[in-house]
Length: 254
Ligand SMILES: Nc1nc2c(ncn2[C@@H]2O[C@H](COP(=O)(O)OP(=O)(O)OP(=O)(O)O)[C@@H](O)[C@H]2O)c(=O)[nH]1
Ligand SMILES: [Mg+2]
Image (cartoon, rainbow, N blue to C red; front, side, top):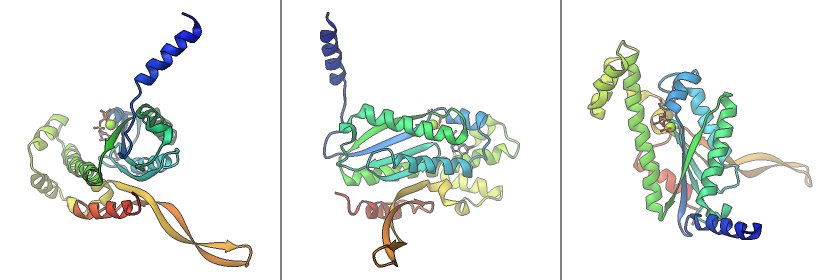
């Protein structure tokens, strides 16, 4: 075959393998740290179960992803995962799933690695969401997951710090209800309800309008200017309250 013929076949095969997020669907992407159990234990020096610097780097990574060319409306992070809501009408890379996943995984991995000076990798999946109610369900689902995992992680590390082995700590908490886990922590002097919200509910990031003093060179006056700034919400509400918060962010979006 001639070069031109080979190229035509290759290009056709490539384009036939392409997947797109269909129009009228919201785009959600979820990135997750690859092998972070090992990485957080062996390579990074971190507090357990939650480390403020790790949390800050996750939040900064979300902020970075707001500036990678996609119209990101909302970002959410908990543990080693990040969810982004991308505008329904975003046409970046013609909504090609391959491009969205690879570019965002690359951006997150590169940015995060630079912060810790260690090789850290994120995977990425893209999910089409057909309506607003499902969007709210999605983010409430991730937050519920954060809540459960955080309670379990606190129980596990409390037992480990009190002389239990890995297997004993896992075995003891495996079949416990949430109420029983709360009770266990209480016995060791930890009131789960008073722990920082970001550890139990995750963190939300979105563009918020803020009023900042600006200078008008024509009138030589200081005037109030309305600007959009990335805002980090570390005190998210839960369930119904979280749904209302998300609805407010989505209010001006079609
Ligand atoms: N020490 C510490 N570990 C954290 C923190 N946040 C997340 N992690 C760890 O990150 C890991 C995330 O778990 P998973 O995503 O389920 O597992 P993984 O090892 O990353 O595996 P894959 O995602 O399947 O590649 C858990 O083991 C957490 O303990 C933190 O603030 N401090
Ligand atoms: Mg992971």
